[in-house]
Length: 169
Image (cartoon, rainbow, N blue to C red; front, side, top):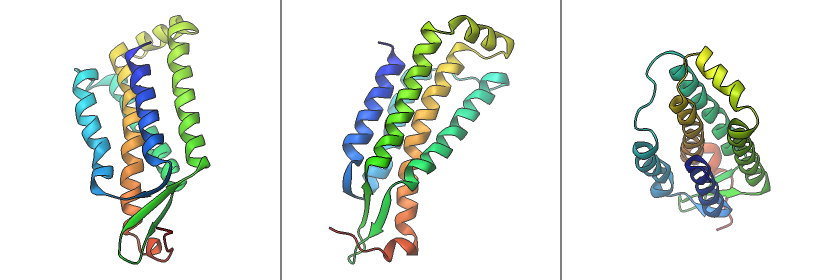
């Protein structure tokens, strides 16, 4: 099992274990993905591309993470109770999105290693993208997705519309 597969599965499990059900919004819950990123990035991204096709791919993966993170966050119900405590509820739709993203990401990784390795290699060469930048882009996508979901939860809990929905605490 590759290192990126292990990281993807650990993140998937951690997100679902933490998010499933009715959860209190805390600063630690919001900051945890940033701390996770600070720990993971130095080990898996010793050098990322700063120019050319690699940088464009890394930027696109961050953009994709932002879009899908916003989608995942939109599937959460966010509310604030009478005491001002924020809450969010993750149901089956949220789990389905995370499951689909994880399965598709794993299929991409498997396909890159077994189904279309030669075509991928040609693509990377033709577009001047390093293998490291390609791997980094997958990790950037995953981490951005988690971070945007958390930031979205915090921002939504601060909106006046969150206060109009009482929480079942």
